[in-house]
Length: 289
Image (tube, rainbow, N blue to C red; front, top):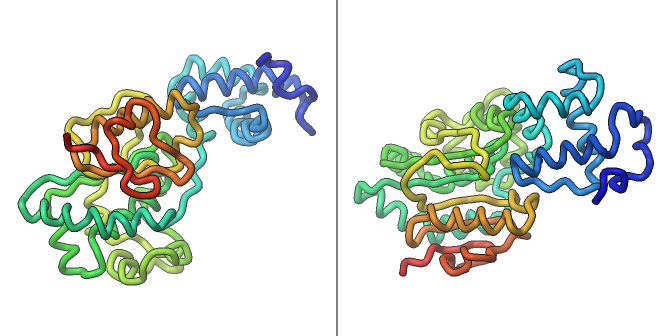
């Protein structure tokens, strides 16, 4: 598709000298190359609204000047890409995943922790942390004493995202109290504390989790395998080849018998299908053979 055909007329109220089809194409090409995110022509206004503040902040004047900047400045490029990620999430999103984890996966993890085995869990594309904390609270359970014993085991939980601003909120772990409404009340009662009109995840729960900036398309800086991976509503922004490569990599770092949870509109296809057995709606188990 040519740059001129992306939008035939200037966007309302925006001078084509500041932002035009060639600028949109340049930004979308960079974002796809860096993060695998596909920006169709209908996202032209979204790109403008997210990038224009950065253009002004850096004194570039036009998108063309800003594109030149992010091509030569990796840190600014990371800011631009981060600004175009979608960070919409909420506690206990797709609750059937947490029900399955609690019912089918948690008991086995607890037995292994009692046997002094290491348990590793990854919330990939964790955004502002609601998924990660929902998963951790479900694992710790509604009994405080039991949960404290679990927290003292060899348990490692990683939350990763490409968006630094979202990770900053995840680390603070403070959210409006109303945001916790979908979470079972016993979990909220045990693993949060009141902070004005907000609730904050308790220190003993927060100590288990490490949040890291990570681009899922780049090399992953860890060794070993994970027992559980949540990567939900992330791959909807990728094209099919990118999705298949990513899921194959998830399958490779899952321990035999480990579980992968993906978003409701996502599917496992490609090479990973031979390694992952569906065990529930958008829930897959790594084959042991």
